[in-house]
Image (cartoon, rainbow, N blue to C red; front, top):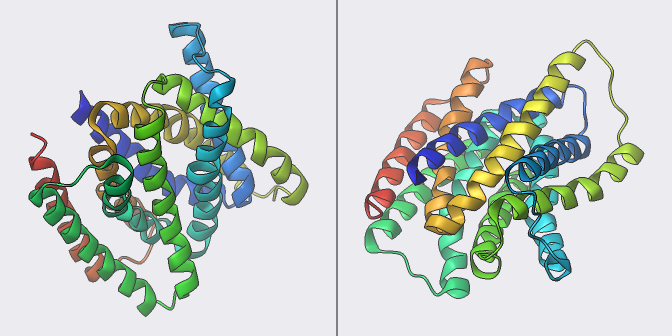
Length: 283
């Protein structure tokens, strides 16, 4: 079951970057973040009502949920659509591949969990491939500030994954996912309404469909599956989906006629090898 979740999450989240790109034709980054969070929260709330009719959350969880919402949702949900609209879905999607390496960095002090030699070799190998992608971005005249901003997104995901494993492992994944997305939507929606006008152009239908898919599947369904994967197999195994996401993002970028370099293809091939190395120790 863990590997099925792994594959589904990778495919869904890898497709989220092209959806952000299409949504940005009409909506601003804060609006995209707010709408995807609300859409995901609604899906999970309906699921909770149908499946168990028990929210499983209390006031003691308010602060940690607010904290993780800021770190893992509000910041990356807003920054990533902005970067995708400027530099393309394929390239920015590749930066998420930093999650496994950063997860190891956070897991050592927070969980006291050290990687096996094979896991460490796989993660370092993947990091080298991502360094190649980073250098490719510099050659394309993408500002270093934007590249480092893109790095903060996987850093925030990695920290949040480890924090959830350490402090919220007893909370239902379904309830926790719903709580995180609800908090995110409540914070971002008023800001989006006040700060970002909607550009009503000929791309409206495409943008609305993209936001709906982003909210229902990429945010609601995939977030629940990911939190469950963290609790079942740990943050490092779950974080390894970030090595598949760039591959899916690259394919979607190519389909959408984005410029894909041979250097990027080489780096992605190395990333796939790194996944096999790291996950072979979990078999």
